[in-house]
Length: 104
Image 1 (tube, rainbow, N blue to C red):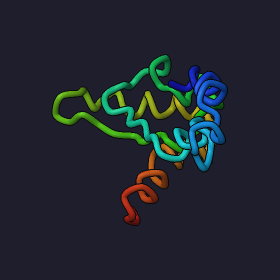
Image 2 (cartoon, one colour; image 1 turned 135 degrees about the horizontal axis):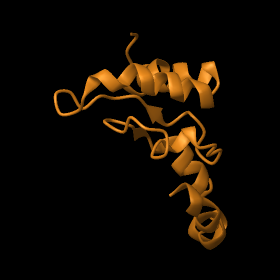
Image 3 (tube, helix red, strand yellow; image 1 turned 180 degrees about the horizontal axis):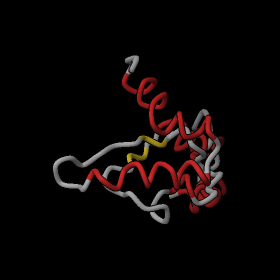
Image 4 (spheres, rainbow, N blue to C red; image 1 turned 120 degrees about the horizontal axis):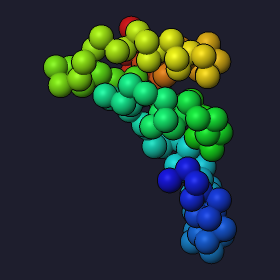
């Protein structure tokens, strides 16, 4: 979807469709991405320099007991090499706290 946001915005203008904001703005504020079980960088949307979504929608999750949890430390280190420390904290903690309204 991130690669389609510009197209959504040009094909569904707010004024024509009666939206209060663009489709891209709605997606950026309402869509969340959980990386449950995807412990490699290529499928991680916010690790590949995707600035359409940024780190706000990223949620770290584990598919225990269906995923090998031994890979998690290595994955988080690799993710920390490609995103800012503040973004890594969002992905691993504060995004979930905000979405689910709890404090870890």
